[in-house]
Image 1 (cartoon, rainbow, N blue to C red):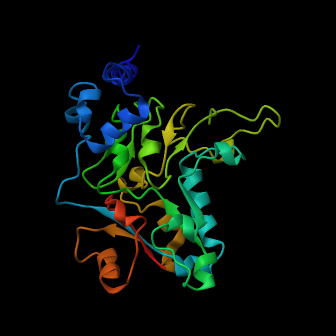
Image 2: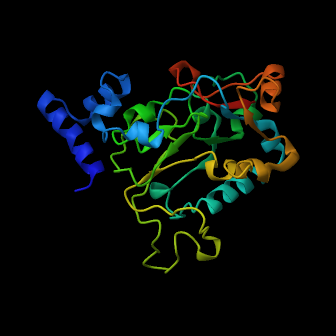
Length: 281
């Protein structure tokens, strides 16, 4: 039995002793009443740098101008395809098993607390690009018993697939539905058609594929940022102005100038998760 599974069983054991079930144990984790380190391998936080974000330094974020995407109907799908291709996101061709890193949804789903009936029909019927919000106060990190999901000092909420035990506590904790679970083996193929879920001609050998039973989500292209590149979706959007990416802590960055001069909204701000994704509607 590896360490990760022993840690998970430790949670189950504590829950049983306390006479509470998994949902109640999840609530305890979300409220932060028990230190996460109590449920993880000793010293893992120090070893892997899975600590909280520093109050200074880079803090990455997006501004998404939904008006630009509305004018260019094909642009959003172009960004989505590019993201999913380089991250080896499987296509199961089945909504129930769908894996999503970045996708489009309706206004009411994207902005549940900002929607009202008096906006224009065009705004209500427009599709909106959504992804992991890389929250400043991410409940998914607190809910993860193995620290498979963690917040980097630059604000990126990342995942270590090898540490994920598939408990899906993070999915229950995320208020944005930004995480997907691999119910099927992404590396496999359709038994009926023989089609690989990740097309071999598009397989990116520089990025890991996942396995059945693992949760995944947008990683803000951390592997590209390490090479000085922009996130793939931003690169695909080009000079359209649809996606502005940058350092939220830099008062001279383009993203800060946009935020200072343009009214933006965030998804479910009342929850206090402090999303790093801002929308121009």
